[in-house]
Image (cartoon, rainbow over all chains, first blue to last red):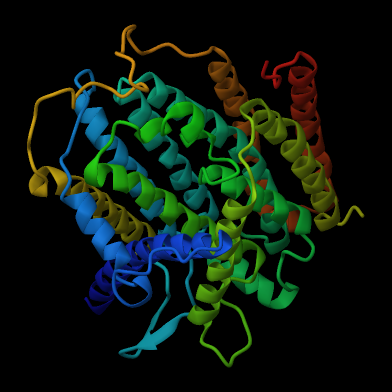
Length: 328
Length: 116
């Protein structure tokens, strides 16, 4: 009984944290982009602009909900739901901290801890493609369709390199359970040291998977208006952004779990704080990269994924396999 | 509760939250139909031809993805237990990896990854 109540509390807290994390990631991004561009960024609503996300959310919710005439009503309405659902669901298997003790019970800081955690995480993150491609298709707008199709082609291309890049971690840890991967790094050291090349590839593909600059081709404003969400308004428009920012938090959390020891760290700070700090570093890197790089050209993007990232991660994977199996 | 039941419950809650949020504008927003609000925005030009066609190259990418991603997924259980399989396990997988490698090289050589 207590465990069920604790589970429900954990679920609500996690969804609350992800929504709050989304809201304040947008604020941090806008303020940081402001500083990168030598201006202040939004700082009028509340002290230091701290209430800005609330104002944005309310404004989005209070806008008129529009749907193009030719649009498929059900698919058009469900596409943002799928996007957000896929983004939220990945985080169920990420361990946020060492198990804590309340009411004499040991509570692990994740919703579920299946032995195939990593596969589940990848499976759900791939579902996010459906939201984007269906949203683009259902809008019955040529730019939206192109944006959606481009997004799906880009995401599936980079997903291969991403899938290969984490194989090395699986081999070294000998498990696909995310909690055991973290624990394996306690004895073997953080995996980014032996797996530095796969880590770099994972990070690049993570940027492409979340459709962020320099891989934000699906929403290239200068050529596609706004891509797959051109026709969306109000809260449904905002939901695509919720999905994008929650995905940024998720891929950062996965990178931390797989390559940077998850919640491990010196004991003067609690484990969950170490996890948050490490994720924050990644989110900062995402924003920094957005402020720095220009957008890729589409043909370059595709050939970079297939001809550069994929072969490199395959070769490094072979080397790791030979090493782990004791051949070298 | 066992791991998968908890996961299922979380997924259900996440889906309901997403579904609930999506109706916010319909419930709270103003309703003022009319004008050209419901036409699609294609940079100010009146949309003419129906939508629904796109380059066949995207299908090609999807097919390659299917082929190679299934291969990568097949490697996951093998990679997880490689430590206990030792050299013999690596050598057996090498055969499979060679086939995949040849397929990849063939597609590359045929220009399958070119985009022009």
